[in-house]
Image (cartoon, rainbow, N blue to C red; front, side, top):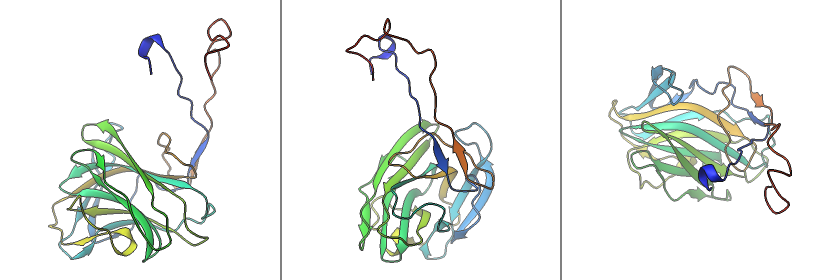
Length: 225
C-alpha cells in the first residue's frame, strides 16, 4: 500500500505446478472441448472452449488423482476462466461423498459460499480479475486422508447451485453454452502463486531473489520487513 511514495517488492517462493499438461484438457465428461480456440490472459490463442452437452448430468473436466505429493498436505488448485454462458466450479474429491468445492460467478467476478460433504473440510476460495472477462479462480484445501484425490473443473448454469456427488452439479446443457479455460495449477501451498506452465511434466519455479534493493540508508531500523 502507499503507492509511489511507499515502494515495495513482491517476491515469490519456489513453487511446483504438479499438473503435467497445464494448458491441455484430455479427459472430460458431458462436455465438448476445443483446444486453442480463444485468446487467453497471456494474449495468445491458447485457451480452450468447454461447452456443456445436452446430456443430463454433471459436466466436468477431470484431472486424475495426483500421487506425486502427499495427500494430507494443504494444496491450492487454480485455473483461469471466462464466462461463455456457464459458470465455473472448482471441486476436489476423495470419493463421491467426501468432497469440497466452490461455484465462481464468472459474470460478476464473485466466489460463492464454498460447500463440502462428508469428512472433507470446506475449501477456501479466491478470485482475481485479470481483465477482458478473465478471472483466476482458486480453492485451497487440506485432503481429509491419505487417499487418491480427484481435482475437477465443472460447469454450472446456476451460480446458486447446490453441489452433490463429487462436488459437481447435474443439469442439461445446450451444446452451446460453457466456459473458457486456461492454465491449471496445483501447488502444495496455502495460496496461489503466479502461473507456472507445464508441457508434459511438472515444473518448478525458483524462488525470487532481490539484489540491490536498498540498505540502512533506505530502510531505517523501524521500517521494512
